[in-house]
Amino acid sequence: MLVVGGGATALGFWIYYAIRMDEERGGIMDILGFIYLFANLCTISEGIFLVVLVLLGTIAICTMHRCTLIWYFSLVMVACVASLAFTLMTFWVFFRMESTVNTALTDYVQKDYGLFGNEETTQLLDSIQMSFRCCGSKSYEDWHSSEWYKMQRLGYFDQSEAPIHPETCCVLTSDGQPSNLTECVHINAVYPNRFIHREPCSEKVYDWLHWPTLYLGFAGVAMFFSAIFELGTTSALLRTLGPLEQKPRPIEKQLLTTSLHSESEDSRCSTKERPKQIKTQSKNSPKNSTLDKNKNKANAKAQKQHKMNMNNRPNGNDAEGGYVNSAFRHEAEEQATPL
Image (cartoon, rainbow, N blue to C red):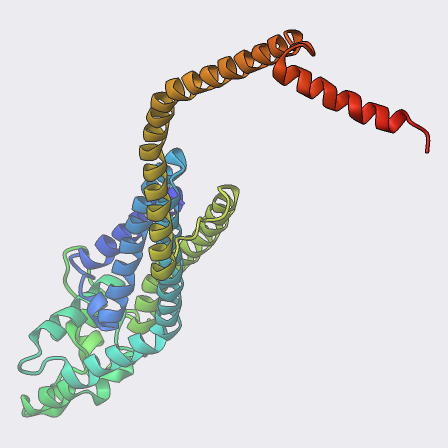
């Protein structure tokens, strides 16, 4: 695309300077009107735009930045549409060029040449006939019905002596003078002859303009297809980067932020309560351990006392013990006696 853009820019500048800056033929672009100049300038601007796009695309590919690649893809799409529009306009100018040139030169010859206030048109038509070596728009006979010829006849007492063609239609010598002025402009001369240019100017001008215009059209086609190719490569590169992460909507984003905030608050509360629980456990742990030790000691002491009481049981001679033993004996005897 860099080569295509640079070539289109160079071609546009070359055509512009070759046509516009020509001393003898520079005014021919005015025949076609502003549309031809616009088509030429559009080709130049489109080529410069493609060169800038290539630089942007190089940065995007080197960095592999998705946002830059998307911008590059969008701008290439704009360049593609613009190239298509400029190409269609250029070919439209090309296919209408012949009729436009014929109409413009016919009006110059029939209505504008030699009249007051049309000095630029007169000078332009003289330069065209001299540089292209032609006469009239479609033929040298166009001058026979022109307003210029009518004005010339009014200036002569004998109308047969009035010139029928301008001197710029004559074949010139090496020093720039007509080779035979009488045979070139006199009404009684036999035409066509070798002293007057026979070719029509419209064909000469069209042959000189249609090739550069066709080149501009081909340059637009090349820019269009290069932009299409660049769109394909950029889209393939974006596919390799994977799908784009979707951003949450405002409501979803708000809910997400509130949930995250609540989770963070819970985590903060849990983190704040954990040290307190640890401190309370650490504070209560000595008390609990001392209580457990005291209970264990009391239980061990009670068990020891019980064993001692069992071992030191009193005999039947004691008052209380005797009473108990006698009760046990009496119960045993009752159980042992038969019925």
